[in-house]
Image (tube, rainbow, N blue to C red; front, side, top):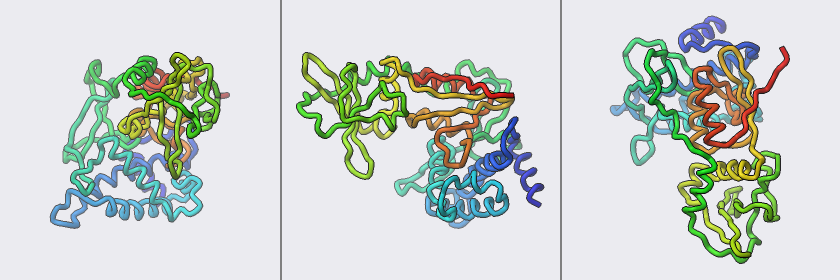
Length: 343
């Protein structure tokens, strides 16, 4: 029964096991994309007169039930699904994260002031050479490939004009954000921590109480509460220091992460990432958090590698790899190296 159900899900979603993929990971990827698809249909449950929208609480409740059923049906996948959760019954944060990925990707929409969830209209859009992305539901007969939280179909269309995400030249971005900042003279650094761009550790581990003297562009932060921070740009002119807060809008999109990556590149210490090419996918290993724009693209088209909650390692479908690679190198200034594996 288990094998029959797995085969049917794999067949319907066109998800294939890549070379060397552990069985538990493969089943986990299938369940992951299946949960995304079930979420689309949960929004359409006929529970009220207005059955095409649902509250986030309703979606959470139904998804909790489905995740539990999948974990019990495929026990080999439990570790992949729940990761290091001490109590798999407390899986609400995993479901919220998956739901939020669907919202960021445009697979679900917040439709009113109470943040009820609905589906977008059924549309197709060119996303990569020979591939069209589908959002929404339709009675049209198609057999899309499920990738990450979305679905794609093969197409003969030309994608010369498609833009997966606006290109950002990270060196120009750093100049732009400094040029547009509102500067105030800074007389005390007592409350600040400083980002050390010469540190080769991940950015989250590169904060110090000592201002980096060899830098002309500096990022600082002030801790507010519960590990919440305010971020500031700092510059030195004529033996005086000036600071400027990073705007709320930029902070909401985690753009301070782009600033960290830009400053590291600026001082010749680029952040690194690695990848391993397989026959049908690439395995991407990141070692830092990304700005939400780029993170949203990766979450849309890629599966987490080691567990449902993995935020740093991804299975990237081959058709979208060159676009993802360009985003990492150009938009983020990360040095991407191929990891040579034996065999």
